[in-house]
Image (cartoon, rainbow, N blue to C red; front, side, top):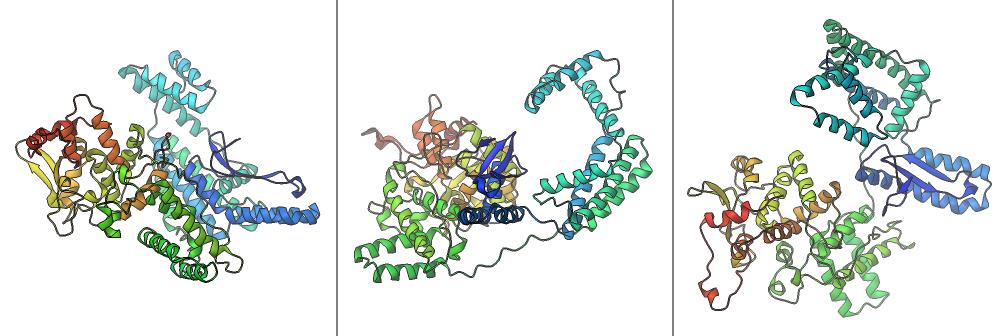
Amino acid sequence: MKAVTGNKYLYLRKQRFYFRIKLPKRLGTREIRIGLQTQNLISAIKRVNQFKPYIQQLKQLVIISKSLDTSDVKPMLMKIKDAMLKQLSVSDIDVLIAELEQGYSNGAHAIKVLGQTNLLSDDNHFKEQLTYIAQAPSNETRTKRLQEVIAGLSEDDKWPFMDELSSMVKVLVGLSDDVDESGIDEMARQLLLSKGYEANTSSLAFKMLVSKLTTSVNVKNDLLQAVFESDTTTERQLQQLLSSNTASTVLPSKPEKPVSTKPLFSKVYTEFLDHKIKKDKLSDKMQKSYERLHIIWQAIAEDKPIDTYTPQDIGRFIDRCFELPRMNIAPYNKMTWEQRLEVDVPDEDLQSPKSVEQYYKWIMSVFSYAKKDTIAYITNSPCSIKRNFKARTRGIFSDNELMRMLNAADKEKTLWKKWIIRIGIYTGARRGELVQLRKSDVKYDESTKRYYLLITDEHESQNLKTVNSKRKIPVHNALVEAGFIDYVQSCKDRVFETLTNVEIVTGWMPRHMASLEIPPTNELDHIRSFHSIRHTFITKCMSEPDVNINLLQQIVGHEISSFGITSNYTHRVTEIKNLIPIIDSFEI
């Protein structure tokens, strides 16, 4: 069992994640280990986070156990462990059975279309291939060998091979026997463990589950036998029975989180500031500094009950602060905070990491106040994140990471999330420019027969960073093939109607990257955010041989490089045909 780096209590064994906490011997056991029933890192981390209250109870038990007998401690320990597992209730049983029966129905449909070849006919070559696959030492090797065998077959031989393989599965299904009583008990126990329930075999709920599972398994076996014997009448009746059982089961609604009774951050901060002024004699200079920091917090973070903030909330706030501009240089010193949050800041204008560290120290002090035993709004501070407050460089994404984003976009149901990533990847446009994009800004060039984006500030709701930002960007063919033009035509006015401001995208991006297991920094400790998509586009285009820098600068909205007196004769092009080669050179 191998510890997962950076995730306390999380371990990996045979591609499965486990929760594991080591305990002193006096508690009667050396550890608590719980299978998390997932191979997905994000899901495993979420499950471990749910155990935090119980981890705290275990730590307290370790402290008090020094003065107790082992016989007294063990029941207390088992009570905590049982609480970490969900308790099966009678209302849960029908839901579990319905999920199984849906699987039976889907499986029967799959079995029905399997091959008709006699099991292991005289085809010795097939037997040799099957033996080669079966003798693989692991599932990974077995999968590779199967791919290897199929890749080595001619087009004429592939279907007969798959037909023989499918026939084997069908015959094996037909040989299934009824499961005995002890087998049903074990099946019920494994089902509960896989769903995160406590498998208390002596409970009434478990006995009811076993009873319903026995009936369900018999229906499954009858269905598979009907499919195997081509008894369509019986198959249809059993499928209807399974469908009615599944349809009549009402899934229980997710339990609502208890409403917090603690005060909002804004109220706690007022108390904190008053305390610092009266008790700690906070100077006028520091009061002004605190006021500036609080304005930034209000602009970026949500005001909610003080005990509902998580380390992820704090991490997103700090990561957003890394993207803010220095306030003492033009043009940022004349901007409002709303404008500073909207603007995309070049690396040389970003705040220093040391300045961002001051934000973190400030927010830590607020939550430390809320945690004081005389205040006790919270028991644990969410300020437990780790950040490198040394020099930070904006990082780029690898081709593999870009492909993960594009594949996720294919499955995304929220339209702005589906398209803003794609457009960003294939245009290098700033997030603010994309958020304010209108349907009328997607235009068609008759001479080249290509669509293009007009990045403009013509509408009253639009604004641009600089005069160079107004430009044309040809639409990449990959966007057209993905259906972008059809999507735009379905829009009413704005391309992203539900996006009201840039901060929605900014806040979503870190969560999206985490769901795709894309770290916020690369191996060189360069920070990544939505703006890194723009950096990636520019970097990849710059790496192309014979790239025309002036044209690239015009596509991304940078000022055209100066060439002394010749710069007076260098103008921005207006014809799309000159810009198309730059866009078409971008590949993933």
